Amino acid sequence: MALITYLTTVKFGPGEIAGLEADVAGLGMSKPLIVTDKGIVAAGLIATIQGHSPRLAAAPLFEETPTNPTEAAALAALALYRAQGCDGLVAIGGGSPIDLAKAVALLATHEGPLERYAAILGGVERITAAVAPVLAVPTTSGTGSEVGRAALVTLEDGRKLGFISPYLIPKLAVCDPDLTLGLPAWLTAATGMDAVTHCIETYLSPRENPPAEAIALDGLKRAVAFIERAVQDGADREARKEMMMAALQGGLTFQKGLGAVHALSHPLGGLKDVSLHHGTLNAVLLPAVLRFNAPAAEAKYAAIRAALNLPAETDLADWIAALVKRLGMPGSLLQMGLPREVLPAIAEAATKDHSSATNPRPASAADYLEMLEASFS
Ligand SMILES: [Zn+2]
Image (cartoon, rainbow, N blue to C red; front, side):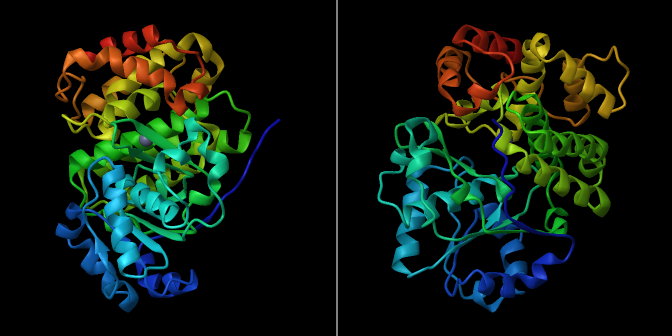
């Protein structure tokens, strides 16, 4: 049986942030909490957005979102939300502030601890329609979290867990590609490769959902066509717009489930001693995972090659590795600064991640360790 749900409202296009005052009011928020990070504030984006909305100009601001969202940060933002009497959240940033805002929206309306709501601990059923409203304004093109049902949060004990519910989907996503014009090249590449990975992993997921597969293939074509232009020239507005659409499409296909790349990048992103960017991790891991999955997904690999106009003999793993290299990204986990001794624990954690269940080829801890070793140096 197929379960297909679509989804939420998206306003998309250059200049869309001009309508934010009406958008915030339309969701019934009189005092939203803005959730963002220091980089977004420093880039001047909060000031730009506040210039379009008196309600947001007056709103309390939580700017302490870490690179990978944590339970501690969610609790700190929740304390501010309660102290200020807020009635909704406006998340401005990449995946981390958007995921953190979702966690705050959950905790503001559901009794803790946060762990109770983790998908792998049976939390999906415990999340109700009471979740506070979230309006998402993405400032990167990659995460898809602006239209996704999931928030990834690292708990106090170090586990990076997924919180998944249709009620966690932002009520409105305002996608204005002009907000990404100042994004540095490395972050454009890393977030863009996250979008590429979302499209590939959801397409390969064995769950039955042809509409999501069509969106994934279209998103992949778009991302592959424009990612190099966006990285080479950040001011290329057409490339910025197409990459934001590809990221949105990646998010719209999430309901099909991700795969081994994300099963590995989630626990890697939860490591405390080394801060690893989610999109960069995915780019580094994707070739080894594509090699592992190849025997289980021949027809779909052929369809991907056809969609991308690649010759039939193209090795997709090699092709992705070459793209990652052209984008100037790290080619290995070692280059990213990962210590080798963590690999066995990460392989074990990957088997328990919610994304592992929808990998097209079942993977054991030994399989995951092999993929990690292949990506290590
Ligand atoms: Zn991702």
